[in-house]
Image 1 (cartoon, rainbow, N blue to C red):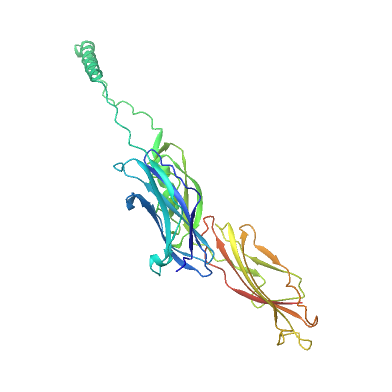
Image 2 (image 1 turned 60 degrees about the vertical axis):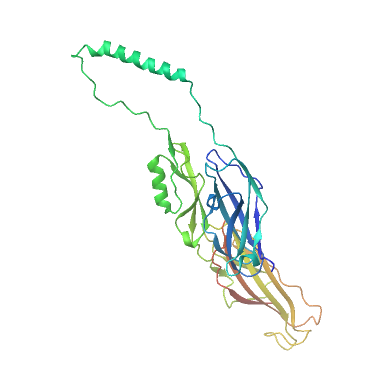
Length: 351
């Protein structure tokens, strides 16, 4: 069985930090016309499965739509150093994995050996001990014989803190994540939105991994899940008619968090016979003369798209051309995840 899924990634190599951690983004595209539930998992060679994690691995992907999956790599310290490989796999949730599985190209990364502890020469310890003894004798000679000297019992001030460890923000509401960053001396950075009904209002990704030490005041960018509202058609409205129009413009309300829209327009055109202007006549001379489907991406800042009329049929240049439009708009976020589509709208246009 041919898989409807295509798995890609923008790189074939990923670099790990000093803590043996890294991140990698995979994109899964539904090449079929129908929406389907996909299951994504990262697979490594010679890597324990617990070292590769991904949030929300099962998602609904619309036809010809895409979904992004962030894979986090955390190699344990006891793992051997060397060169490792991984790839992404995707398959339909309702079928056996082997029937619809699709794989990405391989991605390689290097695991460096852990640093060896520095050994201090034994003579340094001896010198340090001697210094302690000498300082103790001097202190006793200076302070020990003078019982009248007041003793300062106030604690010595601690050095000023200049850095903080980044807390784990995933799963927290946005307000709670911001408060937690402020508490440790950091701050909330850019908030990006991803369509994710299961994690609405919560952090699903952070740019700096937890427990990473950063200077005070560092901004931590996050991705927050949202449930977008469906686009609302504003023109033409359902059941409307646009007589004698040379073109038609589709308009809808903007959806926050959207960077593009998927506009689908089914247009069926025909010509009436010479005795009627309300319905198309039978036979090839009067029957359907144009049947087209538009399915294109529209930038998120644009909510008006125009199409011209269909070409006129070559037979019997009399009668009226009737176009029946059925159209629908679906929002898409910057990660390629589609939201809820707007309602299907139908109207006619005569010329």
